Length: 139
Image (cartoon, rainbow, N blue to C red; front, side):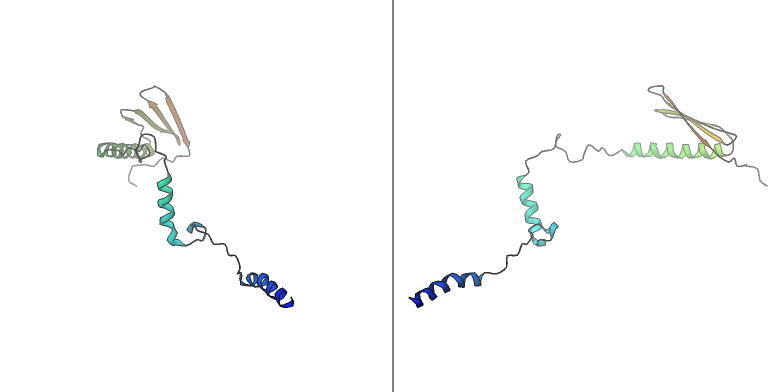
């Protein structure tokens, strides 16, 4: 009987001694898992994704400007730059485009820009103080 108890006791104790530590390991490579799982996880997520964007396009509603639009914008920027250069010498200026009318004047160091929206007729006034006038005469 003693041998049977010893065998039974060893049968219950021995499998417990075979057990190892349980170690948690992340699967997702973003959290420290195996980097080789990344492509697999991405493909699984894309296969399960049933969402379709409204409109069916992936350009997020962006329409690239045409070459003519880019050219027009560049010309308008250069004209405004020229106007501001003239205003520094004390000369007022005006720029008329399809969308806006820009009036610029410098009176005693106060730069005033009146921007009129041609479609609505609304006017915005921007005033900047402390503008120094430069002379164009040679000294």
